[in-house]
Image (cartoon, rainbow, N blue to C red):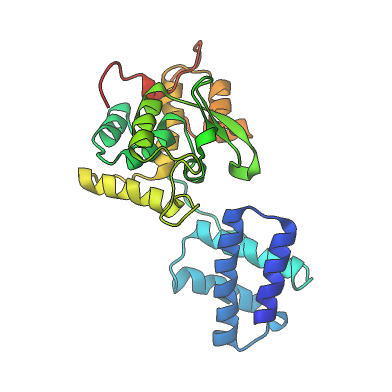
Length: 286
């Protein structure tokens, strides 16, 4: 099976897919090749549509993988068939799965304040503050460099965001104050803003998620707080502050207005100069 795996990796690199897609597709292919080898004793070219359908049932019934994630496996199979096996892919034979859409968890302003204000570790507090106050995605905050922070323009340069688009994010005054304290007490790092444990590395998304998980446990909350919850709260709180939805789209760096609408729970539009919701807590010390 090494040949197929090597050919798959080569085509992934040739397509220059996003880092997250590369990682996920690699894991999915390992699972698939292991299944057809151990369970079917077949080569990929010998697999039938019935075999593929049984594999999807295996993912759902045995491995208990969610429909949304199974759709990722299906996308990987389609890529494998088209680009490695050079065989046609029939979406009517292996359709994408329907899945339930739940109302997302949205933290209130008070909950965000409680979540951030009590964090003792300045590095963790800075990471979490930036995710909320600037609406940064977890990978965006992990990859920040010192030069990406502009005090003069009160902005943050996102050099490689989602879909590989560079962009500019708003910089909160309160977050900058926290970030400055962290930077001074951490030896004033000039490379990666949040260095990892190894030399010339940055913290990983898993590390940032652990910050959120540990803080949630510390508070004793039963809520499913994630990094994306903070980004969602950023957009929702802007809307509640009557910031125009087109301005929110720009601040959240969405390509489509439909993506922005998905973040909005309630409120009315219309405001003058947008400010980060992290700066609407008065003079309370963080």
